[in-house]
Image 1 (cartoon, rainbow over the protein chains, first blue to last red):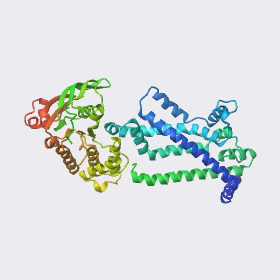
Image 2: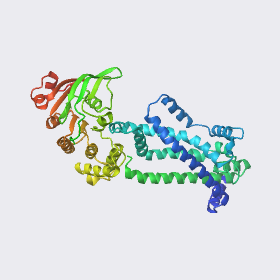
Image 3: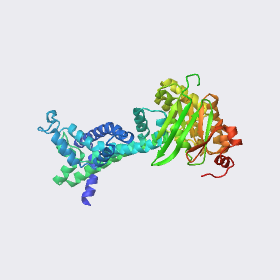
Length: 236
Length: 242
């Protein structure tokens, strides 16, 4: 309990003091995870919607894979990206290993299946409702995809949040491909792991509270925007 | 609306529809001519909705042909039709947004689309609700919006699948008035209902379906005065059919 109390106090001090190192770590965490989520959305929205909408050979298998990949172990993804990007790997010439870009790639791989699988489910439900109307209008495949993704936008925010939660909280992948280098690739989760292994439990816990606070703020903002815009468009 | 070349008449040639091995429509042969109001009557499960969906192209027949004998490419034939469902499909947008979406999908330029959408809303008496979220409107308003949306796309033939089945009398009346507006503008109307009173008010022709077969098809007056089949006589007399 002593550690817990100490941690809360330290978290307050850290945040209130605008510690430069801490802000740098928070900034990198957000930059890496938000970029990864953005990439995941650009790929996952159309991919998930297409699987929901179009009949093609292997559609069931793709759907099964997406659902399975929602639970990809971060360390495995980290390891695969590490192998690809290491000097001897096929993409070694790019020199990306131990850079934020490598971390973004790893997290995007983790998050894309989550966004795509949830999008598939959400769009499939909406398609059941909209299908006959869009068919009746003779909407092109692109118009169908666009209409469904646009009209599902409030439900899709949940998919984005799920993806963001996964990205900001994972440690295995960024640790392996980023290397937790101070002032270069250190993010919240790897910092927590480091402080814990050094025995600085209070600092580690304090960082944990900061991480939770960020997640809370992000979720609250999305919730507020959704509630306001949702009432306007009546997703009910 | 009828100045352009017509896609009608619509002809069913020995059309059969089966689902999971069950034959739901048997050897349908019929021709729908332009300008008429045809009401499809029959008890639940007779195949009324199926027939409409086949005609509109939402379903493909298991065998037989559905032929648009008028002029036109496949795209033109499809885009000269509209359909309104029993439970209107309302996009998660404003009333106006539902209309502009339909017109955008149909390739109408943006400015012209807004103009046509506003005119259609006015026609349906919904101008004041233009910015109301469609899904927060009442059932009657939603069905009127669905009709306005169909109107905006300027169909030559309008299919309606029990459009008033879940509406109160006042809303039903408003919908029937709008359907009359389509007819007056030269649009061919094909509508299913199990409401005899509504059929008497609207129909020029009656197509009576029972257990997936066309039992009678002809002028409404004759159908109501002298139904020739036992099933139709029982239906017109208000007896239960199954």
